[in-house]
Image (tube, rainbow, N blue to C red; front, side, top):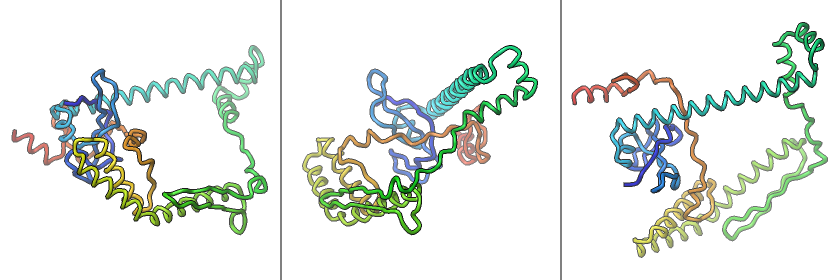
Length: 278
């Protein structure tokens, strides 16, 4: 059985990858591990019960893993904040020394402004200066060449009418590029459908070749996304390994709808009743 470690829980993914149940309140993120205990592939997302089945654990072990992952994330967050505070103190001390020096001059500054006043001055000095927006004349247009399948299109956005500043030009050009991509992908839908059908036919002939199966899945996903006009990556079967993991959120707050069944263990009222009957 494949080994896993618990990364935590997330409500960004609400579909269990084992049973396919959708619209869950959240899922457990499990990272596959290789024989040496190193991360192997991308995270998988399961409901709590399916996470136990996939990893060969008990529900209690899954809950223990979730709690440990939360504690580890909180510890990392605390360490990060401590380091940020220490770095800020070091920068503050350097700024005070550079601005007011030491001795009587520094003492006078503290008496005049107070420590809180010096900190306020320091933070104001560290704030990014306001930079005037780039003059429109420096960037009169934006141009992007798009290629989807065999079609190529140039999208050009120029200053004029309501587009008067560089910021407005960038926003307008981004919007135009996205609209063009949606249109081009939908226009190439027949080609993507044909490629998906061909890949699926090849997968039926080569059931034992996992890479062929993955290529078929990828081709079908590309066709579905083209139908919706959404973004898709390269057609490599391993491209999904490059996707960033969904953001995992941690909290120590217990939802009001859960009841405590034992110290630090909670369940819905229905599940608590079932557990009480066992």
